[in-house]
Length: 480
Image (cartoon, rainbow, N blue to C red; front, side, top):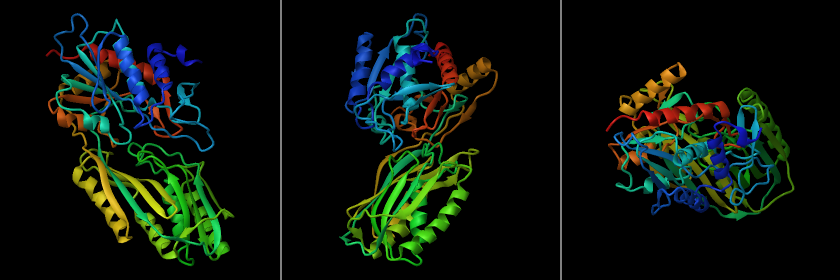
């Protein structure tokens, strides 16, 4: 089946047009121009603010002028991840999509349904002539995935809407009313290098499913950097290890799927035997949740300058000690992760070390408790630590008028109650709410699986349900 034949055709048409435009985070120039031209071609008031957010205003349809005004909001950028055997350039190519049963997915890359389906939905409402809605502002933010700089740069007074509908969650039976904040923790150090003194060994971890470092952090998925760290640590008892290179993971908000290291050891056979024994245990440990995990440990002829044995030991001990995964569950909201950390990227090349973390929490004090623990470990190992990109969480208001309205509509329309939840992802609502404290906010969306990984896919029946729900909400926005 072609995407053009899927219902609702208007959404998949706009999603296809959007996905033809390269839109990596921090490289949104082309998609900003695309959305700006889209709004101007509709004859609607369209502006681009100082940071690159696009705002398109559309008047109320006849008879809806006395309703509260609405902001429909989604982000333009997407997470760019691909399988290692896929040749694809996110900077120049559009996403290649296919239909697989009830799902739309990409060919070996992230799909961009996060948050492209939200963007396509807003585009569809903007160009419609038969969907009742109050006065609305479409807010398309930039750089949500790697810094929230679009939301952070949105100034007070740019919006006049009284209700914000954020279309950026991934379960179609959920109404989200709160989210986690976050902070980037970056660990760095430069080391002198020397000649490798022993046999070079290559260690490779791959085949993990990865996933969203907020929404999936509690699911027990393997983190390739942490698994690699365990294998390196296993050799410290009987070996002096020199690290040559480490290359693991990628973006902060994606659970890392692959990691490799080149190391130098004096007794290669002993190291391989020790690490292989641990490998067997790890494969058994992750057999259920990571059925495709693959670990390869072998002699290598590839070599380069290495970090000293003393400094290598410090790096390995630090990597083994960094907290990864759930730090604390919420005592107030059942089954909600309060605080976590993702050891997202580990890179050592030419003696330059960089470890990227994304620490999340719905409570600021516990967010910094995790970040400070990472900082303490790194500083004990003689490394430098920087906190950056901090953004606030979004405090739930379950009794708000829009939440009650959406619960009522969902129950009547679909014959069951929705789940009213808070999530461990970083939504832009908390940041926007800091400048617009009186604005009621809620987030919802269609079902998406595997976001932030090449396994990302969007459910077709869910998109139909989401489209119907969105139109019903707009038609029933409360009176001013």
